[in-house]
Length: 94
Image (cartoon, rainbow, N blue to C red):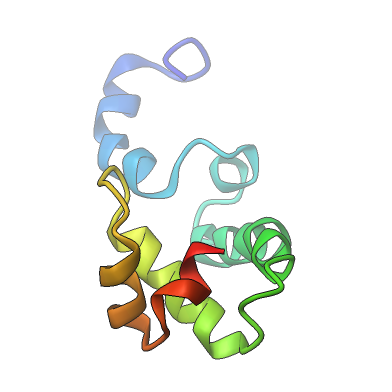
């Protein structure tokens, strides 16, 4: 990004970039970051999660997404995930 703006500007925006990422839509539409990221997650992430036939209840999918986001970069523990979202371990493992 430094090649498109400058070092000082990118240094000033570092926390923002780390929080919201470098998606072109996010960069080109300041102030709309949360809406754009919500749309991206709805269209991509939920599509993948809805393909999980073992998780039939939409509220469990939502809780699963939130629990996985909190564990980014960490080893996933199926038992802990199941306890967190209120499901049985077998539902999560499938």
